[in-house]
Image (tube, rainbow, N blue to C red; front, side, top):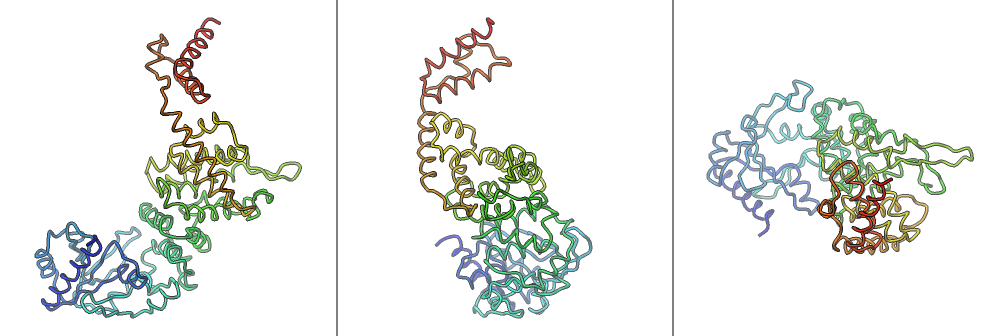
Length: 454
């Protein structure tokens, strides 16, 4: 029995004991939606009707350790499970922050009143945890079949601005479309007071769960909501590219194509989230350096370097994940090199040096493939990837051989100082050119001695 099956068995036991106590346990949210799609949902949410808070807590205590996730809101969990048990409640916004809600628990609330506070019809369905009866008061099943993202209620929907990003995220995940009325409502909402952590969470879902993550950003663009949290990406709209190499259009369009190509590769990436973020940010430097030359040619020379601070600014607006930011910047810096070196079948010294600079060579190869595939000028040549993977294996073999270290330089008489890192780098270059350790050490010492004598 896997984790989902164990949680579902526990949920059924909660439902049986609830019924014995005179209440009714209903599956709500994602577990109902995903169940209709034939997908197991990691988190199981249950709403219990007809039991007072203390009675519900006592019932749960008989099944395991109760974790109070929001006791004042009537939300409990059971340790070592992915089950949340809540009571039906009313909510009323009292301020701009996402925590500014007046919440009142009401065990006797009707299904209609309780489900009205939910965001979309596809998330407002209930299913009896014992009998399997589906309660669909807002047309969620039909919307799910049509892959339509439609809000439940104008007033309650507008109380949580995060729903703008959730609408875009669900459209991407379900390969669906946002209902025009819902999109118009989203366009009218102020999202500036949202917690960046919540926005980043929706971004991650779109990047990691959608077959075409571009749907997320295209939806935000239509709703004019790129500007608040993705202004660096928004700056790519309308930035022209050389049509000879980029017939797909501007930098934004190219980025969207690369993102969707990357989604096809993310399952084999070493770090799927980092890889997808790198695909999203790799060309953010182009708006800074794109120029039209006297002969009419459009260029973006040096965008991989100019974009480094732009990439950091974009990501720091959403997260303080230092490793993710450094990974994305490293990928941006190097993303042009693999295809260039592969196309000219470069010497091993250059590919070794490139991979040595990369924080994740495997993902760098994948990014180069996604970048080349998102241009629409010609199909990606798989021979380039084969060449790069062969050269990556070469790099690993070279790195496994003995090479000059800092200790070797000190033992040979070079004192640590301003030039020490340069000599160590010189030793590595010699190593990459094929020299063995002893010869590389002799050459570095000879060059150092000559330099000091001049």
